[in-house]
Image (tube, rainbow, N blue to C red; front, top):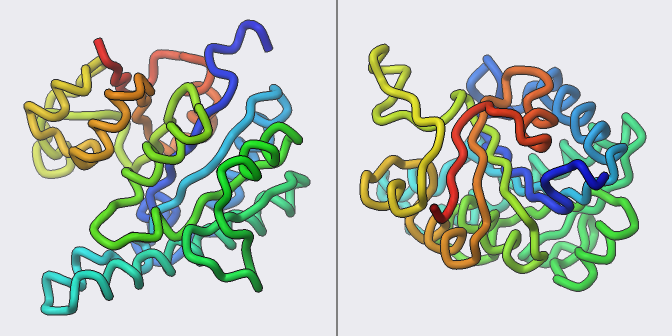
Length: 239
């Protein structure tokens, strides 16, 4: 345990990553792959919390762009994250990992309400905590949720799992010549408008000195590699 670079981390999973190659919905093969890697993290003694997006089911910004009330669209997105969180909980418990889903919007029949001290206590007992329903407020992304919860529970890093293998100067899917960054500062992210996370989330991470590791979820074993500090993806820090 002493050789591990991080004692407590937040794993941020995008909804799109959970969709796998199908592009929409939940790919059970991806759920299983994530669950098995998280189980290995737990065996190492690292305390981990998960924040999951909902873009594989519904994106609030897309709904508002079509004329829907923005707050309503965002609340729908929060509910989508709860669906993903419950799916992750099921996958984790099927591989023997104890979990708790905690939601920013109370829905006691299926999850616990988010209480900071209770979340920390769950992790200290070796449970994986899944934070769902964003911050409970419209106009805030799940990236901001990850940054906020990481600061609240005193996490030492955020592992950001995406469909691409790091941060590029342009969209690598549209531009085959896009340049990948190995290291960046949060000021670089903000000044260059790189789109890793929204400015609120980046500022929260910078102000609280929480480093960010962006990597490809589709490559099996990358969660462990990112946790162990191996040079995969892109590292973003204060300096």
